[in-house]
Image (cartoon, rainbow, N blue to C red; front, side):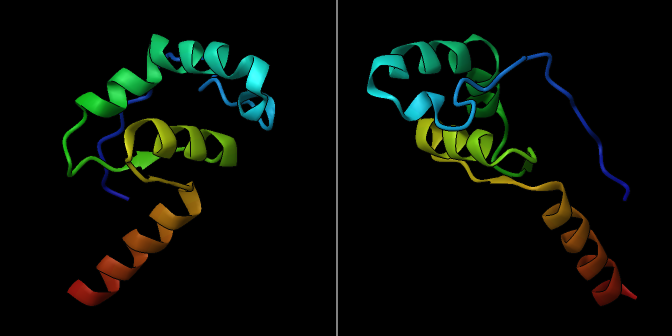
Length: 87
């Protein structure tokens, strides 16, 4: 697709399905996300696309950083659309 990819060694985003929505586990959920993932998202340029297939990961990223993360299928569709419109 002609993209430059950076993969983070972040482990879990901290949300893990409903785990991060549980009141008693919220603080731990945020701490896990703040280890690697969320600071990297905040440091990424506005033109950087954030890609993750997990719904809970996308939700954790949005709620904690305000950035939208895309599913891989959305990125593939975007790539195909841009390619079609250029040629």
